[in-house]
Figure (cartoon, helix red, strand yellow):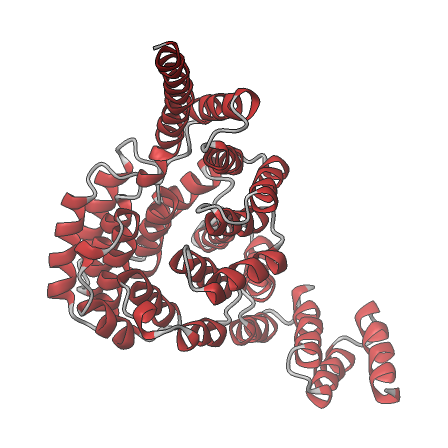
Length: 439
């Protein structure tokens, strides 16, 4: 009887201990899931919940070192640190799991997230090596690692390397919905829209993980637009707007609808839609929509005043946008074009502005042919101003540096010697001619 009671007591204590650390682990996992949940809608992680998951998991490591949840705790802590941006701590935890628990069910997961952590630190070479190791092992997290490798090669325009990954995969991996989507993405980004569509049309979007659905619809719709199937493109846009109404990136599909309108030359409809979207609180893609608005006014409607308003909003409110510099240049260029219509501007100022238009084409837009044409126009129309010889010097420089045509470069310098004798321009031109002939 005493033996039986002792057994009951020991069993009860063991159950109590088990329940204790199971509850700690359960809460740690719950807080971790809540912490990364915002990622599903393209939002930032909730660091408060991630801190709680780290705190709970750390208690397992501190007070229950012999429990079966130690490796579970390590993987949670490592991932939480990674999503928080504390990469050195994340690397340490993933390494501990792999060093001390080489047979753990979480080994492949730790290896994958270790690669992801190095990638987030811009250690791309190490990340590629780790993801390739996961793929070659062909166990867990193969699809995720293939996805990371594809994204790396896409960013560096190494599409052939991306294709080679799929060629080396067994057929069962190639047929997986996520990997079919990745193959379509490769073709899409390589401007093979027909090839992308062929893969996407045979892919059941319902079999994709939720976080991939928005990419599926984007590649599908954009490819339909590029191949001229606007009717189906619009149908999928309307469906996507409903599906992703609460998603942070929903403006992506309104942007695609604008592109459809532009293909149909419905410029006023495009402007109205852009106005509706940008008047709301959403911030995603607003800079792109404003830039498109400016472009429509500038290029399609020849309304530079309204174009300037759109570009100015980007310059004043979106300094971190990739379109910021281009908006600045367009503001400057359109400002000059508008000034040429200003009757109060002096003749000298108007000539200077025409010269600056050539400068913008060359230095900002890198449009060599347009720059050459504008510099020639300035010289031909206003040879007796200081911008006449300046335009010839610019033309000489362009033909020498960009067209590798020394004879043509010298020809422009000789025009300076001919048309501007006994000036500083002639002296500089003669000096350059001598240097070029010696070379």
